[in-house]
Length: 147
Image 1 (tube, one colour):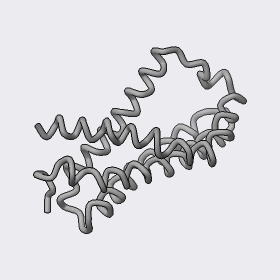
Image 2 (cartoon, rainbow, N blue to C red):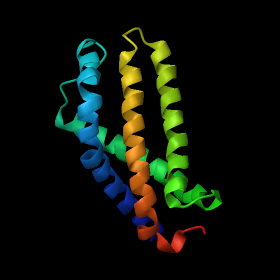
Image 3 (cartoon, rainbow, N blue to C red):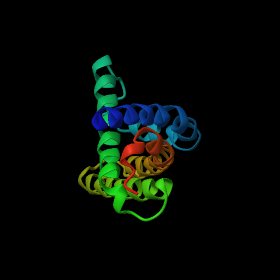
């Protein structure tokens, strides 16, 4: 039952990711990010097929699932309330994401602005999803609080 609750939570977190984060992303990041992609068409696929969209949403779901699973496993050993714990775990996950992006940035020859913008975009999205997780987790998995 816990696994199903975690899956349900991640579905909601994905909805929050797209509904709550997208307006901020549109305002701050999307134009320069998509511009960087369009400037390097040999590197980036900007004409998504249905399969590309399905694959992209699945990869995103799995990323949020893995971070939420890490939170579920580790949160009981962290100090602070659920919001603070969530920000800690999602912050570490963002640091890993940013570091991995930097590793890839170092290996490709196209302009580096894409990676920097992607890391900024991730900071926005990870923060919003972390807050949502911190608020929703105790309501969805109340019997697994770790307090």
